[in-house]
Length: 305
Length: 305
View 1: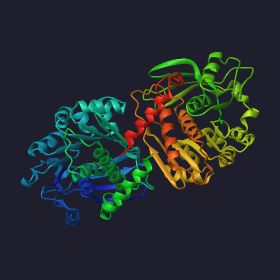
View 2 (view 1 turned 180 degrees about the horizontal axis):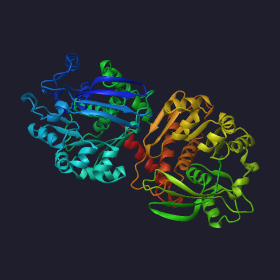
View 3 (view 1 turned 180 degrees about the vertical axis):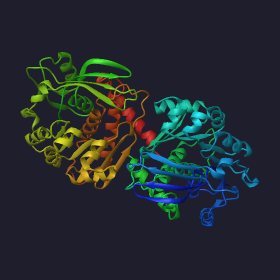
View 4 (view 1 turned 135 degrees about the horizontal axis):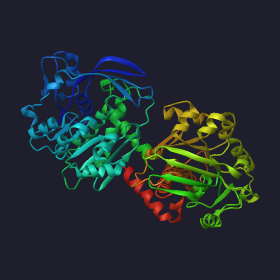
């Protein structure tokens, strides 16, 4: 019983007002998997090059992440680098070397096909669709996308998300996808596109969940210091999806438990907040489930009235 | 047992993407008073000119607002006009004619001096201080301010807010006043300046309340349509303060009831959201307490987990 996660595994160069790393383990699939691993076993589908570090394999395995679907091929691992503005609200990409990721053609190991949960990280929509079709009926399929696919691959994206149970998206992407500036109208328009659940992430301002008959919202967690926001949205996805998997949740269920979905939004927020406390994935080197549950309770105490 | 509200009463010209009004009742004191009047009797301290409309007097009185402290003097009423951007996140002031407001020197009627609650709308800090000193020991004093006073009247502002039980301020003003960009640090710095409670308003993103031993946050209410945001922050102040007055709250009380303060933030948010549904103060011509309580329950249902 495992969550299959598809996406990029990369090395990142990151500069924030708090410091700089030249080359650190990153990529959407990495963040999602690490975050989800606190809730459920995770199976990864991704590609890396010959330069992928033995210590990184070891770290991911230590978090109970199955790497059978992490293909290693000749060439270099995807490399991205960027620099954040003083207030961290903007970032400039300095380099994007797709390397082996340019030829990524996800093939699922036989063991993965009957897994019950699937999360499709932000990659080309046609690839997301191909992975979905390789799986035998998962209990839920969720995914993420970005402005590039929304603008330039809309014809691929729409049939892809039509098959998803939920879509995780940030506020500006939700506006772009729907053509609506009001987020309520945007969410309703996206529900018309297929997904029965839409989660809109608003960074420091929190998150919102929409279904036809449900609305839930939570403010962001107020950190003492945002050290590095890289991967926070992916960690939200990992917490949200991982918690639903832990609960054995079935999003196709007609008698869906709204409370569980709301709590999944909180666990998503919790994991996104921890992600920002250190550079890259470093916070997950020490984070424990009891710290996660303590922050969940903190969310309860500062939102209850 | 009444809430004394000091501030501007004005006529506004407003243009939003939804329409335009040439001259409508407005001003911070008006919005705060109308909003608070759903919870508690209100007594106004303000000044208007000879052009102040009989219908406006009548409307305010119909909401149980005591106008003994609304001085009418020769000249014209304060006039402001502005136009909102397409997304409503910016507005440009077209005209500010202070008129009789330029000589505003608030003098409290004898009946007001023993009232238990005082809210000082955004006016020159020295005038706020003078009003506070005219009152015999109110059970709480709260107030608002703005960037102009923070930048150019800091020496007047600091001794003024030192005497307040709470300060209501928006996020950019909180950063300006404290010199801290992180809102948690900003709030703690402001608590050092005197007020034991700081409420930071974040517009569509919600609001946060800080005390030394308490933190509460709520997301914004998602409206179908933001018709006109003018006065929303003042209506928040009216809902927050009015609800505390209705509860007979004493902010100086050592055994303060945190739950009541959190609920006051919700009532503030509720009143701010209603304000945006029509032009100017028009929503308050039809709004009922049962609609307010229904929206309060809606806040509960979409934030509970």
